[in-house]
Length: 155
Ligand code: FES
Image (cartoon, rainbow, N blue to C red):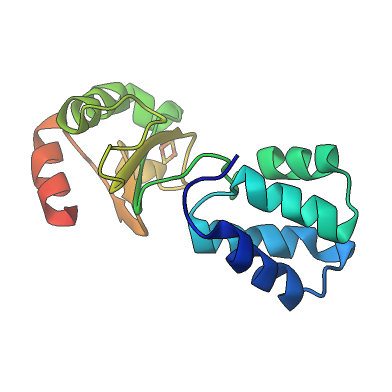
């Protein structure tokens, strides 16, 4: 299925970059994820055709690694840590505040394609709990009342 963009020729360029070598399908996926912010099904099919790697194995790779997504993500990912330390400090209330403000559920992308909201289990900053990661920025001691301002800053 096509995602509506010119994925095909851009995917071909990426496959060419790796000489259509089946030993480099993960590298191809990394480039495709970066280019399209997800792995379009059409790109996966092109890699299968051109490298000879079975589609089932490619699908397994695309779903196994957290760095890859078959669904298009927003420009900025908002990750709410719901690991134990953050959970006991109110991470669920923070998550609900983001869901309310963005009008999406965890795992979804806003209709304008700006934000994808997701949950993660511990980002290694438990001393700052509850923690939210927006793009590359790690923000500690987040409360629900901070959420509107955090979003305004990243709109
Ligand atoms: S549990 Fe949230 S940073 Fe560790």
